[in-house]
Image (cartoon, rainbow, N blue to C red; front, top):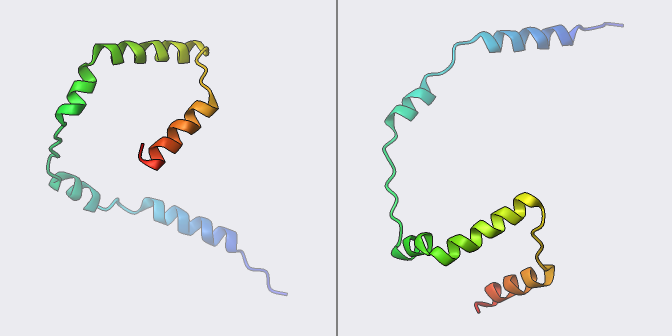
Length: 87
């Protein structure tokens, strides 16, 4: 019966692979990337500036942090169905 020592062969392969120098392709690709321009619609700007919405979100954030925020699963499901129906 022949017993092969495959484990030490795999370990040697892994050790040799980890000692290889890193490829510079990733660094070159990162250097060649161009800046991305983002245009924000006027609706998005208005939503961000809406004081009532901001206050409502702050209350929800506070309730989430305190663990007191509760919402009806039925309410969420109704909203999802309305969105899917296009209403």
